[in-house]
Image (cartoon, rainbow, N blue to C red; front, side, top):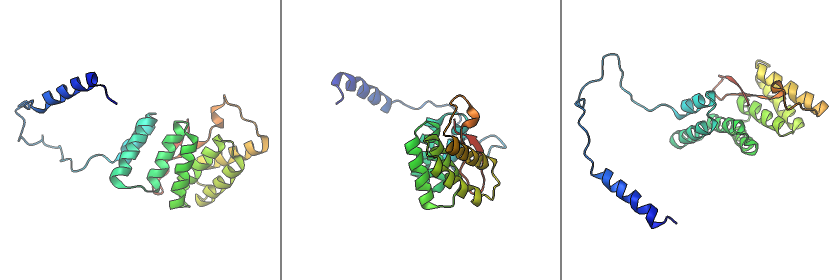
Length: 188
């Protein structure tokens, strides 16, 4: 419950804003400078999310992906992107759920397969990770170095059950979403 002493100043501030006249800047009705095109649509939320992921702003990327889903609907790309953001935030269970949901929509979506495999490696589920990464490797025709490295890592961990926390090269890699367009990123 909001206390009245907190609510009253907020309501007064909102009421003051309601009647505030707009400032006349003198630019209303003027055309944009030559060479500036009209903005017909806002920027795609998936693009914003991808850029935020590249910048290491994983929580903001997750929010952008959710907005994209609200505007454009949920699809395999969106589920994979949300899973990647959750994985980057260390939310392994949520990431796994998102990748599995993506695969329920398209069981041959290579980025979701790879990223699920990477998540399973992080959780110590090396056998299942290996099986999933073998499937991703086959569907990708062995073309992705990241999938190959993740598969090797899953096999090595399955055989050795040894993990050196300090070695960043022992971290699985992610593949970004996209119809046939795979951009490689790291999981951490």
